[in-house]
Image 1 (cartoon, helix red, strand yellow):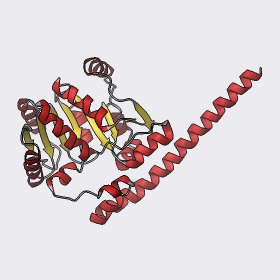
Image 2 (cartoon, rainbow, N blue to C red):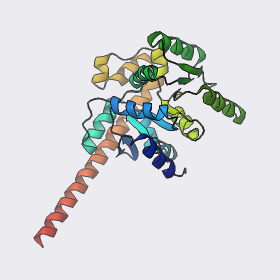
Image 3 (cartoon, one colour):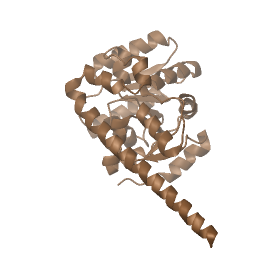
Length: 283
């Protein structure tokens, strides 16, 4: 089990401001944050080359973290674990009364970070996916943000890196002087990569999942109306039924069951506390 880096978190909070507050959902500390709030924190940390880890969790990632204690422990040390999916946003509201105006969707957040990075002169590094995908992503980002500094980019090798390869990759990222590293390896590999390099990469590592595929044109993004009505999962199953049907149907069922149990537990605890207060007052 990994040890909490309390000293590191205290240093980051002191140097770059308080990160968005987190709340327990199935044992995972999810940030009740918005695009604007998360963006300000990320850019501030990136300009100061503060080592930070950011993830955007949908239902699948949340359930994986709740089942795998080691993975969940990693996630709980991330500076931001944003509600990527609408169900996660709604869980924050149901369980903790956090009425966020929208989710904080990884692919959308990536574009917002790039737009702000172009203005602020913050370099970005792209790591993950296939060569054709990450190259197309680089070209599309440059077309959209002509002054954005793409400090480096390279694809995944789709296997664990050797110690030599890992050290060389870290050196390339450092030499690029990027303030933001977008990691597109898919959940949970990207989060494990970011966590493993939290002390060696002096940049904000942002795990963005399918954003590489979407912004490269390799895959289509769900229409806005489906995203707004928590139906993105249905669109993605239609695109990749054999790969995704189990992920969505099984994990969505587990999510609903866990949500019910945690909500019922909160109601029960609230009711018990109220009863104790009443009994104490009677005495």
